[in-house]
Length: 524
Image (cartoon, rainbow, N blue to C red; front, side, top):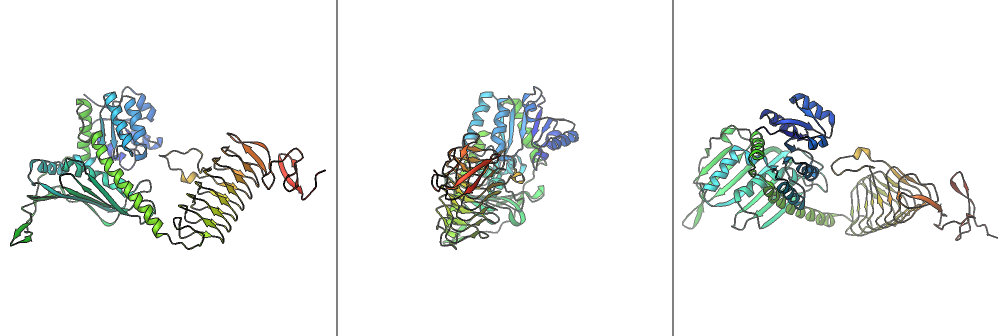
């Protein structure tokens, strides 16, 4: 029986899956977010270039291999399963446990194979190591540790934990044969304040077995080692070594006690003879075989969830420790900045400006004098805020937004920076500028779609959604926002006489524009 597999995603790792599926005779189609890329690969491997929808609708396609960004795995995999396809998903299976559980539920309901790509579980070196651990050749396992280190590949969409650690966590859980009862993680945030570049994750298991995973993309040389300590022997699986030296066994490398003193005998390694099977070829063939037989894959959805559980707990600890460190390390160089607020180094703040609890002003931003930023406000990067601006609680002023003097931003109002956001598509180069001119007021929970200019002293009502430029002094209400009247500089709604009831200033309207013509006129 021939299983026809379509590859979705031809990026850094997807291109290897395409080559391998073609070599084992199961590549039927290729899809990519960039149609030209899909077409190029399809021509190379003499298969079809299809859209995702065409793949899901095709009765000729039996299965899909998903190598898209991790944030898209759940959505794409669920759609594929519901379309009746067997599914292989590159690690991680999903980003949330609930999503992984839902994928497993859908696969059972549709009676389709669901497999996660933990590649090293199909490496001949690890398979032999797992066999030795299971049969007791190494004795009782006492400690496991792995190092996955390199200079790069540095990512911005995920930290080093999610990028490097899943394979090692998968191997350690397989060797342990149980789930950890304690998980702790520490990391260093060197290049970017929110993305960990180096992490160490500690695991403690109910039987007393302990393990740690050390990953870094800021290491001067590449290292990929898994070390297993047993009470009869030790083993080192070093994927950087040639095949004949990938798995080294140190038999008799156990601590002995002589006259009450521990001694460590010197032993020479013995190298295991391993088959030359390429791990990726073995992995993809295993997927195809499971699609045919209906047997559960070695790295099934349940295994993917176990790895995801460790990743999520470790990531939560990294996030918490980073937030605490940021609060503790923030130098309060301006008297108006609260101790819990974070202000990046290259930020300027004017006199008499207050920045309240848990707010963050990012790099290359400037805040004028006499401003007030409420709790949980984020400004920047690259944002200019004028003098006398009031930004209420829970507002984010994104890259591309400029606030002139005396602007008011109500609680939880929203600025956007792209018009058609997708979680899995980077559109930083498409940020559209937004300008809020002097004296304008933006009501609570309103939304200003990027690319808009809010005119001087305009007033956007609470909950309104601004989708286009707003004239000066306009009163905007509704979804989408429409002009419902005019307001004065003091924010008073103007009647038909266009005289401010507070200051008696007189305005005139001409060609849809309101202008101040007199000050202090007494109405008759």
